[in-house]
Structure formats: C-alpha cells, structure tokens
Figure 1 (cartoon, rainbow, N blue to C red):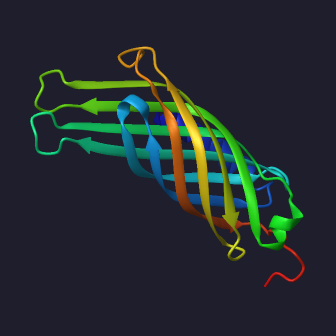
Figure 2 (figure 1 turned 135 degrees about the horizontal axis):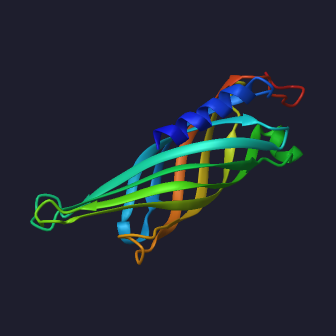
Amino acid sequence: MKKVLAIILFLFISTANSFAAIFVDAFGANVDAGDMENQIGFGLGLGFDINSDLNFIFRTAMTSVTEDKDKTTETDYEHFTALAGIEYVPHIPSLRNLRMSWKNSFLVGMSNSEASMEQVQDGDVSDMGVACSFWTGLQFDMTQVISPFIDLGYHSSFYQNKLEDASIRGYQVAFGIRFYLTGSRDYAGDYQ
C-alpha cells in the first residue's frame, strides 16, 4: 500500500510542473456502504489540470460507523478507498458567468472494508479489493484559490476473500473545499 502511494506521489510530482493548476481537495463524506452500513467520514484529494476540460485526480476517503454502541452486539464498520482517475469539467458559459463549474469524474483503485465485533471471538472481518466510483457535482469558484463544492456519486467495491458475497456499494455525498496551490485559472473578464 505504501509503495503504491509513493509511486503515485512520485509520478504526480515529476509531471505536475508541466500543468497549469495543482489543487488539493478536503471533504466530508456520507457513504452508503451497503452491507457495511451507512458511514460518515472525511477524505483528501490531489489533482492537476491536464487541459481546460480535464483533470487528473487522486482521492482517498475513510468512513466509519458504530452500530449498537455499548451493547453486546456492538459492531464497528470501516471503509477506506484510494482511487485515481479523470475529472471532466465541461465549459458551460452560463455556469462560468456565475463562477461555477460542473464536475464529472470516474475513478478506480483499491478499497478496504472491515467489520469488527469485540464481543465475539473471531468477530473481525476485513477484505481488500478493487473499487470504482462515479461523481458529479457543482463547484463555486469563490476566489482564485478557494472553491467550495458538493459532489454526488455512486461507488462499488469488489472483493474475492471474506467479503466476496457482501454488497459494498451505494450512493456517496461529499461536501468540501478545493484549494488551488499553483497555476492561473481564467474566469470571465469581470472576475475580481
């Protein structure tokens, strides 16, 4: 896992200088993880512009929930994803005049899901597998650097071991802020 993240970071750093804008996303998420229950958590993203309509993006998210807290059936659920892919941001003049963008992305990568029952011997179940997600949402370009956003999406995880028969998929909602670290973004002529 650490080697994969190091390789992605190395590739990102070695190619990022040739791109116009580099950005970081920070977001809170509500994720329906199917058999792993509805979970709340947070995530981070890192990306850069490929051209005016396409971005490369890497997103990681960690969500969790505890069911039946302080009971003998207490169960902790966790879901982690590390995904990379393409984000398409079409140029729509009416939205750009409002300093807004419509974002659409498709991401693939890995996911890890875990369920833990402390009161049951061998009550821990975890698995690592492949995941994909689709996102669509709106971003408001508040300033040249700060852009709040809301994303709605759907995700699915595919496992081959302990969670092979589990259904780990569902909707996801993210509220966050995109911070542009470098690059110049072009807005309408009257943008201040």
